[in-house]
Structure formats: C-alpha cells, structure tokens
Length: 342
Picture 1: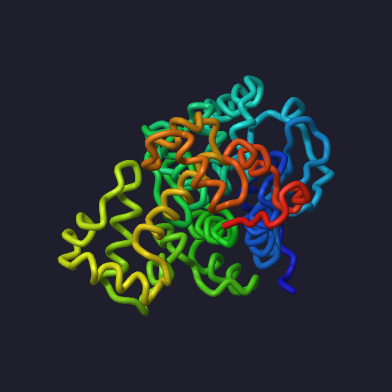
Picture 2 (picture 1 turned 60 degrees about the horizontal axis):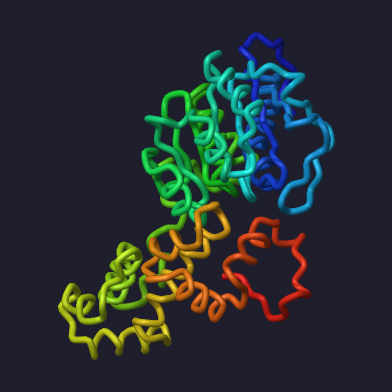
C-alpha cells in the first residue's frame, strides 16, 4: 500500500448529477479512475458527490439504486467538474429550476459535462452552443435533429474548453483518465489505468464503434461497405437501386448479388431497415411528430412509415414511443408477444 502522505495538493471536486434512469455503469466507470488515483497517490486528490433533483434515491437504467444523494436545492454548483448523467428519456428533464442551477454553475466557472445522454440536458439549458459534444451513438441522430446548431462527433469523448462529454460505458473511464493525465500527468494516468485493468489510454478522437466493426466488418467487399455508407448518408431522400449501382460503378444485378451473398437481404430491404432504424431512434428519443419523422426517413406519409414500422418491430410507433422511454428491464412485454428490439 502506498505510504500515507500529507495532503498538499489541490483536491478536485466532482459532482455527478444522477437523473432517473441514469447510466449506472458509466457512473462507476467515470469515478473509479479517480478512486485509483487517490489510492496510488496516497492522498485524496479527487473528491466526488452524488447529486439528484430532490435529494432522494435515484434508480439507474440497470436497476441499481443510489440512496445517498444531495438535492440540487441544497447544494450550490460549486464543483470543479459537474457531470450530468442521463440515459433514458433525457428530454423530460427540462425544468426551469434545473436549467437555472446548471446555468449558475456555468457562470461560476464550473466545467460542465454530459455522460451518455447528459449532453441533451445541457443542450436544452442552452449550455452547449459553440461546443463540440458526443452522445451515445444510438441517440446521435435524434440529438442532431433536436439541436442542429450544435456540433457533434461520433467519438468516445470530447473536451472543449469548459464543456466535456462522453458517450457512456467504458468511454467514461477514458474521459476520467484523460482528466487525470491533464491535471496530474501521464505517469499517474497510466498507473490508474493499470490499477483498474484498463488496457490503454484511448484518445478522444477514437470512434465509438471502430470502422472495422461497422456496419458489416471488413471481411466483405469494399463495394458493399460503400453501398451501405451511401444508404446511411441518404435517408431523407433515398437513392434508387440504379442510382446506388451507378455511384458504385456496378450493375443493378451485381449490387443485388453482393447483398444477397453477404447479408442475405436485397438492397431494397436492407435500405428500408436502415431507414426504419433511424425512424425508431427518432420515435423513442424525441418528441417529433410521427409525420415529421416519416419525412426525415424517406417515407411519403406517416401511415406508410407506421405500416413498415409494425412489420419490422411488431409495435406501432406511438406505442413504441411510450415503451421505448422505459428502461428495458422495467418494460411489460405481455401485451404484445414476440416484441423484439434491434
């Protein structure tokens, strides 16, 4: 065990605001490198506090309950870092009191951060203008639709002046280690990573899903990967099969053949699934009218989207909007047997 040292270093104060349904794993992942740094340095160079809206217990999306929290009405946002941890349905946290509290922290020079979908809460408060942020990749399209003026990245985390964000999960470890590296040096950051068995210090620019894993890996023809990329970039105005083939310098028959061989679907069916997956993200993560979502995903009418949606997901968009905002393990599936998520 490292020897006891007299505390002569500045103690960095971290506040983590846990909103109902928060990302429990990311909360612990973010804090554990700081715990390790304290142990390895032999002094409390990092201190943290769990905050909540009302000072009561808060349940994470995985069912873990944090009981010992301080309500924002009892605590001034005077931390060095204030992290907002939100996962499910972040759009519901738009109260004037919360936004005023967060803005007070900004005026006091607090570095504000978002974990998982915490950036959504900060964006609603108008605190991310002229900053680059990340959210979980599943929510990226919805975030871009809600806040088109805010620059986003598909990376693990961002540090942009007094705003930081990470996509959640293990990326929270990487963000914490980068904070340690900036404040205390590479030696302590590496030692903290080693202590918690984190393989390496990942750079902020690394993709949430490495290209070799998306969308179908690199054991398929490059033309197939390019075709899928074209589909993902042309959702509002879908390309026709002849247009896709022309861009790829293929015949329509060749295009159909590589999709059938490597994916088992026709290009038309795969393209429809891409558009429906985007639609589902917007249905469950925003309050946009279904008619607008249909238009954004290349459907002429809301009814056309609804029919295709039910066929693929076995649930209507309206009902999915309600159930999709409930953490998975708390949902009741008895009403529609055979429901499946993507």
